[in-house]
Amino acid sequence: MANNFSHNPVVIDTFTSAIDFVDYFPGGIKIYSIQWVKATTVGHTCIIKTNTNVFVEWECAVAKEKVEHYYGGIHKNDLKIDASGVGSGTVLITYR
Image 1 (spheres, rainbow, N blue to C red):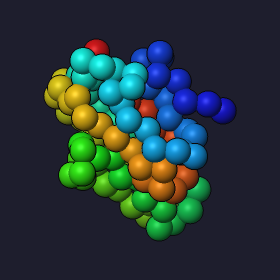
Image 2: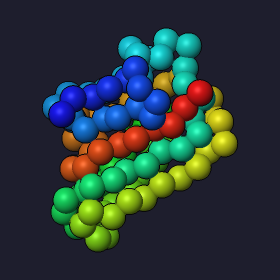
Image 3: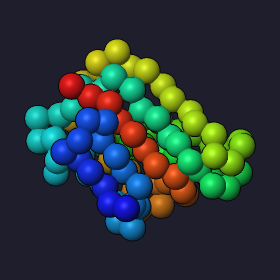
Image 4: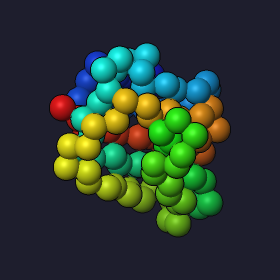
């Protein structure tokens, strides 16, 4: 598949290069939830940063599990995912 930043939720499933959200949301993004779904391997991680600080960090404990966190509309203008930030699966970000 391919990353889709024009859809709500944002669907990110291709992690071959770093992803800087300012490229897609220049004024920032108001986040309601972040989900990590379909991770294939126990021990894989999902790390989303704000500049150089970790904003979200999960480790897959059970293959194909879904983990989710609700933020209630927190505004972020500096989200990044490094090329090695997500081991497998899909990241879904619901925003406004």
